[in-house]
Length: 239
Ligand SMILES: [Zn+2]
Image (tube, rainbow, N blue to C red; front, side):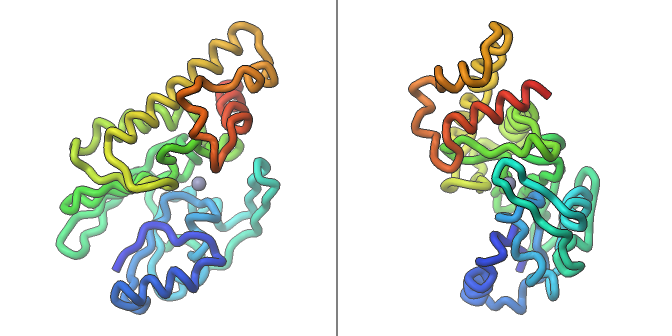
């Protein structure tokens, strides 16, 4: 068995129960981390005692040192060895398992500077990690190597890289199709255009937040609210 990401540390017992239902936690051989964040790699310390963790080089770098997420007022001490990826790569890697090739490709300067998109070539399923929040304004970790422009560019790349009937597993939100990802791409491009035009017109972040996003995107405020999303785009464009 192989899993993509292992959720919050506090959910490890529930995750193990789910693995038992799928054939047993003892059969888990590989954990792929799509990026370093606590809600995706939080189970590493426990699962990494027996399974092999695979991730981009920067996941290991970040998990082995103290990290901060100022946006949420959170800080994370260096992780124990069992939480660290054992196999790392800079650009790409493949895992040959259960009769198919599973391709791991690093998409630089996206949600973070540690992101991997995972494609199951035979099942025709792609896991985007947090490059895709389906129907939700995304968090983009602009303090730690992320970029909204980079996410928009890389989402465009995902739209051309995989077959039209691919099943998409986003980092947050429900299972998706390319049609859903296209709408997300349009929301990113719209937000970037809106904020960069406002900056060019001499508007402050407060002005931009007071105007808000077009009606079409209002319902996307849930995990990340509208002022926070606009602040993330503003910061990303100002760097
Ligand atoms: Zn994340």
